[in-house]
Image (cartoon, rainbow, N blue to C red; front, side, top):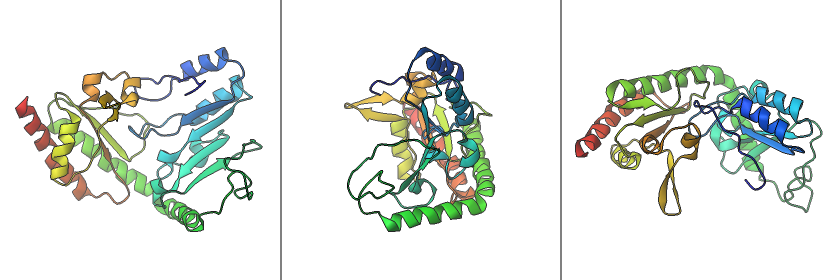
Length: 273
């Protein structure tokens, strides 16, 4: 983040509002504050409305942006992003086509053009519009609104059943995010002591369950997730983390399958230790 300042989170993964307030007071001429609505790795939801109030009070000249990509399918953005000047979303996170996104611009925020030319997209991004993708994004948004609240409750119940079942069935398993934390229904996140998540993923793929590890390959070496590191989770624990995604098409049978195969795979890996 060239020229930027990263504000820490608390142990639950939410932005530390006290640290943000101190930063806003300490730094002069802040041009932009950007905070994601929901984290893509843990599903934790940030208090965007409170952040917006802090920015308005302590850095009134700053533009406040929130990345709402992970929350669009599950949360009321009008309420959850209230006070933001810029809100970005992408279609493929709520059933729309990949490559289509939208930027909500509130008020008279001045944006420099991304591409100059024919003046399309209100002169902010010139070039022929991808009309099918734009229409698809809009239609997907309409469909999400039909039953979003009911779907969110149903998926959250399945997420909780999945996490509860794994913690109960696997010795050394524990939730990454503290219970009661505000988060989207779409992410279950569990750490397994004494297990390498990459090895676990390999075994799970062989039985038809596809998940992800909270780690990324950087410069040829496995590095722990910066998200988990910011939450104070140590490298060893982060190395045994597992992220499971749920969606509107997830079924109870899917959860049953996960609860059957994950404990077996972890037990197999532990037997090698």
